[in-house]
Image 1 (cartoon, helix red, strand yellow):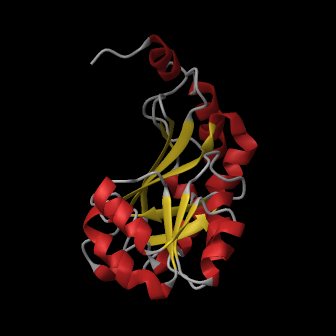
Image 2 (spheres, one colour):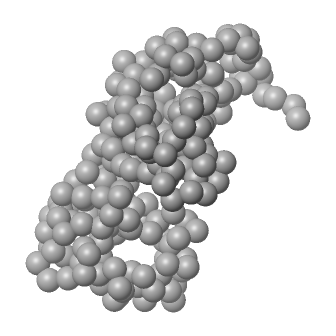
Length: 230
């Protein structure tokens, strides 16, 4: 596989086998983001747990101190006063059956996050087969099933991200844009890593953080010294 010139130039800044301290890695990732667009900076954390076991799941949500740099479209499933409350809080869409129908009949997915009040989950459950594979199903652990839909909308708009294990026990999360600069990315990095460490399951044995890599959308992965992360 032939690598582009910018990618090749970026790899020259790195030592392949070195594990970098977090602040050094974040500084380097800003230097390796050479694309013409504002690249997203992503963190990939491999954990020493087994996601096949219910007591070793790691999942939650956190509002990043400096947001993600991405504007998020929010759909809220609610009824009565909560519909207006959601719209007033900044939701792009809010309603009930009409949006279930729109998704089912028109294959409509012009949104990034779904929030639902608990009484609507019976209705939203009908969409499980299409929302589940896309990671869009509302969940109480992520704070997207809640009686306070207005608060959840504000958090989503402010840069709330959900972290969860994939099948290979890795968490993949954006922590901002290259344009944020090292300081803001460091604050977001510290917040996410802190939340993941706090979410360590009691059943997890041995080393919890197995590896940690930071990368921009088009840049190479930079290995972080995970032993210093806790």
